[in-house]
Length: 481
Image (tube, rainbow, N blue to C red; front, top):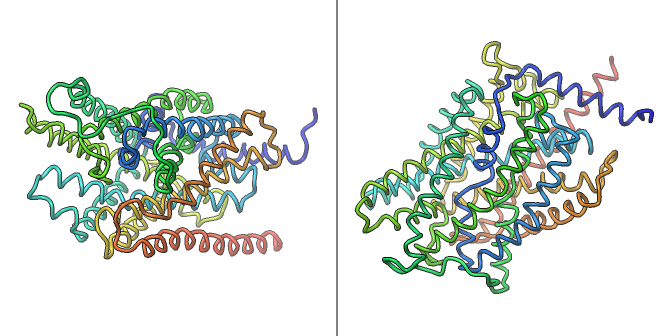
């Protein structure tokens, strides 16, 4: 069949992205992407909202897997098969829904990772308090310390990102390995209590019972669905940096290998958290560290295990932030290829082949948001603000992703992909609707909701105005040419 004009334009746009990606260093193998997927999707903080459900968390995790995790994997694999391009979801939205949709998707993805990064200093300071012990309780609520820690962290991330994935991938791999190692440690401490040896469990760790119907539990289900399992699109962002020329095959294998392991970690990890804490006593910022510290109490190696595991989790946090920072850096870079941002964002260093302009911009922005998130609030509230605002921005990009198989021109997906897109879209909208409300005690629920909603609206309003301005300028340039 002859190629239509629209299909030819689509193919030409794909080739242009592939040509621009050719300048990037090819560093990533399947194993790198598997560990990166675990690190990009799996966050131990999601064990806390799941633990609030009590032993019925198993049913909610299974619902989340069936109605969001598997559907998102089906849609990601479908789109990646068509468009295995550096920039992932940005490219999918741009090529199928137009440059405006692509730009706003990139903006919200960028906002997601930067907001999550700005909240990570609260996680690290919380874990430092566990490492120091009772004398370190002041660390958690000392906002000045957390802000300074965040600034130091971002400076380190900028240096690693400037060196490129030749160095960064080792941080990613170490972080993913730590996630698996921490789960193993939690299980080893929990197993004796599961079989009635030693101290009793703090709460029943798991049961096939449906939690009571309530708005809070529905909120928790939304967090366990979209919040905990979003990110299968992450590997696609690095499509132009895979060693295997067949990037689509490499990414597909990574998703199939990482997916079941991540679901298992969440279910078993929540059971371990409940072994050592009642639902109302779970640390909403660092539940895994809390569980491991309580599990080590009274053991002959308890004095050694607690600080060692805390250091291990801190190393995992560093790997996590390194990965997220590298994801954030690539979004302004690919937008720069399309002349939507200044050329300095996509210009590569002559030896390192990394976008230094984008790296500096992301680092300074993350420092600013770290300071904003910690002004006048407590530690857990600062973390929940950054996490909620960031994941809502991410959810908006997934609304676009699930819409592509349903409404985009040129899309002819099988019915299974369409059904998956509808299921994933429904879970995503549920998350967006409910996640502006806090699940931790905050100084003012109204202020929290206004703060989270306001920053998401502001990000998109500024982005829309900026895109309109750039489009008009590009239109005038083309007219004069």
